[in-house]
Amino acid sequence: MKIVPVIICGGSGSRLWPVSRTAHPKPFIPLPDGSNLIRKTFTRALNLPGVDSVLTVTNRDLYFKTADEYGQVGSAGAELNFVLEPFGRNTAAAVVAAAFELLETHGPDTLMLVMPADHLIEKQEAFAVAVDSAMKLAAEGWMVTFGITPKYPETGYGYIHRDTSQALEGGALVKRFVEKPDFETAQGYVDSGEYLWNAGIFCFKAADLIREMESHAPDVTSAVKACMDESSVMEEGGRRRALTLNPDSFAGVPDISIDHALMERSSKVATVPCDIGWSDIGSWTAMSDLAASDEAGNRLDGEVMIHGASNNFVLSKERLAALVGVKDLIVIDTPDAILVAHKDHAQDVKHIFAQLKSRNHEAHKLHQTVHRPWGTYTTLEEGERFKIKRIVVKPQASLSLQMHHHRSEHWIVVSGMARVINGERELMLDTNESTFIRAGHKHRLENPGVIDLVMIEVQSGDYLGEDDIVRFQDVYGRVSG
Image (cartoon, rainbow, N blue to C red; front, side):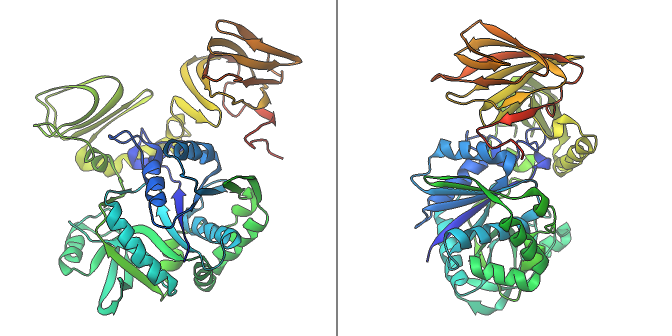
């Protein structure tokens, strides 16, 4: 029976701010080993026996970023399909949309293995064994969830209460799901041997999932189906297909998790207990555990000097950091924000993220360096009526044909070659050459070369926000109808 891994990539990773932002969430954060969670998840999926197709559900704005990450790994000829959400609507919508897409592209008996993109699994062989057990149960019509054998009383995870009185080959029936408990309750769960951590990994037939959802959450199923019927394929050809969900109809899909919509309501839920080296990397404390420790318990990533300090985690890639006489701190330094927190309050970082979001502060959404389908831009300096950026355009890539109402731009080529449309003119600019683009003029930047194009852009005007842009043509499908 065919299995298709479904990678769910979304969220904001608010507890890992300031490295995690809305436009650069947890799956894309560099890990101490140089990789990241999205690449590890994709590799894990490809390494499962019989997998020749992977479906990813992600935000429309993360599509090209995700595809670039997959390109770093290589797909080994696998089919790469995407369902692109205009905004987050929780996991029930994502899973049901994936199921409908698999019904369309692979048929009703296809098994779907739902995998969050932001979890770490260190034991690939044990994971493959657990997947094999889950597939056998799912083939019999069970809604299967993966339960992690707990090693300590964790209060940050939900729990699965399994039925130890009834045998189920390769797994166990589920009595109930339990929300995050207090420490004393969690200790009782661990001592009983009947509870597992809820990993948020699922396996079921696509058709069975739809039928169960129609029974227990018909409003979700009907709304997603209506949205799918009004959606369009943005890209199709070769071994890739990308379906973009219609934003107007997607807004009507209920905002609910797959756990609440289905798993807690269905009588056909089974769990596969497993020990797969799992972590959701849900805080800076969990992230620090991935780094090596010195004799004083400090875990350091970057150029960091220590004197009389112990049991600290420091991430400082851009500049020298020094800690003197402190302990039990988390210090995360990025070009535009720094976090200092006590390890006992690592989970509370999400409250800072929430404050930034409520104020519409840019630091909750973007880094100084922002990834785009064509490359990156980095804000170097800004002040009243001006902003200076470094723009890097990948070979053979181009920005949209666009116009700004409120700002003019001066482009200077640092390295590479640029093809520029500036109003009615088309120019070829070499290193140290420049052009000035007045507000209201249509313009486009393209890299026709084989190396990166690096430019400095100086903006000036009475409004310099990123939303002051009108697109006329775009090879990445970002022109709204």
